[in-house]
Length: 363
Image (cartoon, rainbow, N blue to C red):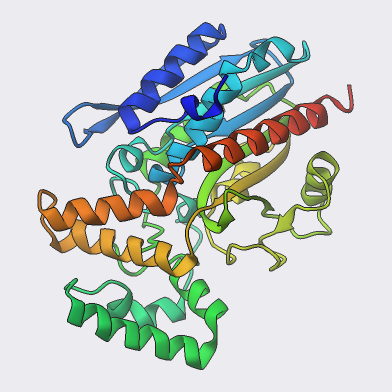
C-alpha cells in the first residue's frame, strides 16, 4: 500500500476518498453541510466518521482542516489510517471519531481562513468576557501586513516596513505580531472574529452530540506550514508543569513542545481550539496535541498568506495572477510530494497508536 495514494488533489476528491475509506472500515458516517458553495459551485460539508462502541468512555478525535487548506495533510493522514485497517486493531473500549474538513470552505477555496475570513484557531475565545485581546504589534504593522496593492513596488515598500520592525524588535516579535491573532481588522490576517464562526459552532455541536459520555478524550489536530520539511512537531497548549502536558508526554514522549512555554515553533496564540476544548468537555479528561508538519521557509509561507489575503480583498479570482497566488499558497501548506506524504502518514500513524495506548492505559 502506497501512503501517497491517501492524499488528494482537491477538497472534493479528499471528501470522496474519506467517505469511501470510512465506509469500508465500517464507520458510522454523518455529514453537516456548510451554507456556502465551493469554487466549482459544489456542496461543502464537514464529515464525521465514528468507529467503535457508541458509548465508548475513551475516544480519540482526529481533526483535519482547522485551517482549511491544511486539510490536505489531515485528510491524507485520516484516510491512510483507515486504509491500513487500523480500525480492526482498536481495543474494545476505545472509539475513534474523525472530523474531516472542520473548515470545508477554507479547504475547498485554498484558504487558511473560514468563510468569515476568520482564523478558526483564533476564534475560540469568550466574546462575552470583556475586551478582546490586543495585539499591539499587528496594529502597528496592519497596513504593511495587509496592503491594498500587490505590485512589485507595493511589496518592496511593505518589505521595508516589515524588515524595519524585525531589525528593531527581532524575528520572534514579528512572527508573534503577525500570527498571534488580532481582533481589529476583519479583512486582515489571523483575524479572530467578533463572534463564533460557523465552523466553531459546528465543531461544538459535534462534540456535544458524540462526546457527552466519554471520560477520557485524546485529540490530534493536524496543521502545516511551520518547521522543517515533513517533520511533525507535537505541540501541547499547556505549560510543562500542567497535568495535560504531563499526560501528553507520557503518551508521545519527551519531544513534545509547549506553546505557552515558548519552546514551540509556533508563537503563542489566543483563541486556539485545543485550549478551548476543556471548557467544551469539562466532564472528561482531555489530552490534546497539534501535529504541525513543516513545509516551506516561514517567510515564504507568510508571503503566500499575505498575497492570498490581498487577492480575496482586492484582486480578481479569475486572473492569471490569482492562479499563481493559489499555486503558491497550496505549496506553502501542502507538500505535494511522495516523501512528504510518507512522512505525514508515518508520523501520524505513530501518534495515533501512542494516543490509543495512552487512552487504554488506565483500564
